[in-house]
Image 1 (cartoon, rainbow, N blue to C red):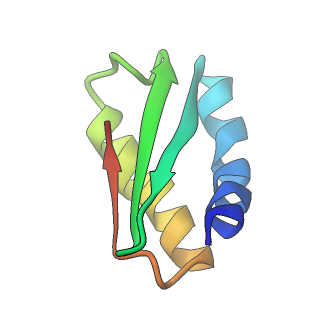
Image 2: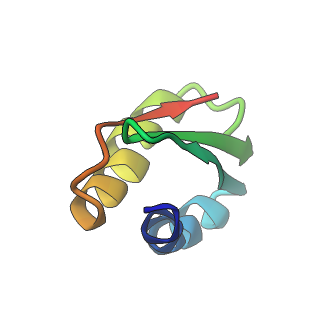
Length: 73
């Protein structure tokens, strides 16, 4: 599942990088929880929560439906 999540992140990464940020995969648990770290401009952005839920999580769950949740660490 980790490889599928990485592939999904590659789809959203260019959009984050365009704004000076990025996303890093920290962990995929056996329970289906994905933990990511928003870096660069995304790390301290007030819109980071929306970016995580409406951008990163949506992309991951579309490509990897077995993912239960995506959280930032």
